[in-house]
Image (tube, rainbow, N blue to C red):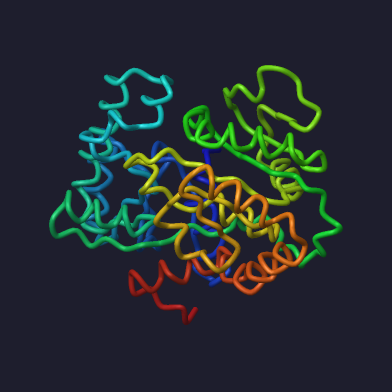
Length: 329
């Protein structure tokens, strides 16, 4: 239970609920045991297994509310062909389709569903008529400290890109030419990539480019704090259009603005440190915009005024509101 979905969907929600004096327990499905005090059980990205079916029946008899949680478009087999794992040649189509089908067959067993974005909610509602689907947005991880504003002259100009998994090569390819041009023009700007990535920018060593293939999550937060401007390029696929703006949120905890490709969930952060780039010209325009100290400071202050609303406690409150859970504990 070490992937990003577990950390941001499960750990964050649990930590927030505990702060509200609501007891929670994080368990793998294979270890779950029903307790007398249990009122709600959230299954994160459930798969259709005999174990799941037995638990749902058991919880229904005990009048415990069951909730499915999905934070990516991985539950509609019709979209398996545009999975990042397929587009980036990481897994065979047969295997990905089988996984999506298992998620779908699990999802239809739930009446209550939570998702991380508006677009995912609409997709679930089209797919499963009559479902009670709620949006519980992603928030900053509860272990990531909130940063105070820093004057732009105190920050080194480090562009950051955090792919996270091995399925983002094509996303990064959207901007590798622009970045190459920009870095050549500005010797004081560097690029830090943390995570697995195949790009021509890494084919030969470059004094302005640093690549760290993998970091433990605990060290990742410290490394991410070096960000001057965060980069979120996305290939225009159905999968990406349903993604959460989690990378925007991570950067905001360090008061770093993000330049990103069009992403519906990122629109809510426009005016709060996010710049949307539709093509190479706009990517270069936004990168150049950030070089001006006054422009950059305004972006930082815009983030500062909204970043506290991205804390994990808000996630727990949204969950309680969605399922009528009393906060009077």
